Length: 360
Image (cartoon, rainbow, N blue to C red; front, side, top):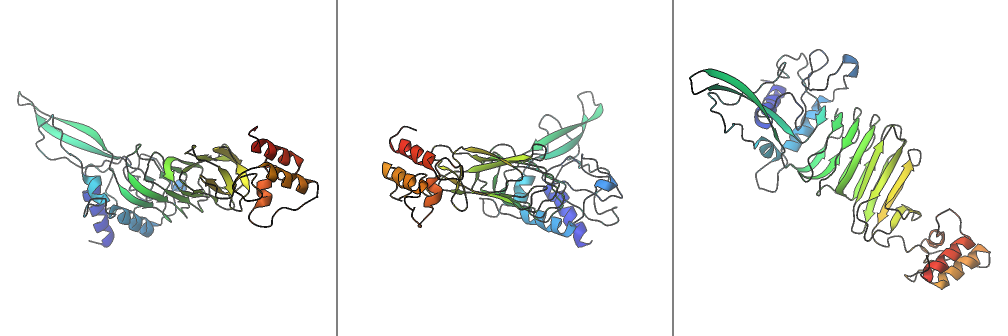
């Protein structure tokens, strides 16, 4: 048996157990010469570029990640299902149906690729039963299993089309990496408290991203048509989120912990917005920092003493009428632009004075 057949046999027998052809943790699919094993139909024109060696290695690596129980891997928890129906008396054990064929046995090229990476396993059980009158009959049940998998979902460089989110609180996934996926169309990953990182850079067909309600500390996304990635990270104790749809033409940054939020800043320290939710046009690509601490200074504190006072307002007023200079240290000029309109003038001095007096 070739290495590929061994891998496929192991994946089918150990991981998918009684999975039917409905997408599970991943979807095994045949090439364009045969029918697809996915519920998503594909034509020859839609068939992706095959990066099967990378796909195979990435999936096996994910299955081999150890959980919090020593010696127990993702492969083990995916397979940890009760394959019998307690309300029946099956004559034979569960039967696995893969339709129309097992990949690698009849496919000329004998490869598989990742189509839809999800976190639900659906399996089909077929029973032959004899009733109380001795009459045989059969029935089929379909069950779902939601495994608590661990580690980083690293699909970088694969032919993945879709990444679908787990159930809220289902997993211990720490990060999602889908960089350099030429056929990736959609990412949904939300509601997972242990996930701190999302990276989807250089994905030329990425049309939709929903990355919220996790503990994201860093996000880097480069959807379809973006010249470079949008990046966002956290300073302090908080988390962030990101959404984008190609049809809307804009993306949204979320600061998801509002109590200590100071504002969104560019990497150079210029304030973008104090709002927890920022909507930006797809042409406006930023490297954003969500500050849950005074990471770039306090807006209006141009003298750097840690608070906003009338003295700051006087310094800004003098600068606005060319009667004085601001400090060259730190980012005093950015902090002086209190209303974030790109200019430092008497309006900013007035606003700083009002803030110092508690009038804003």
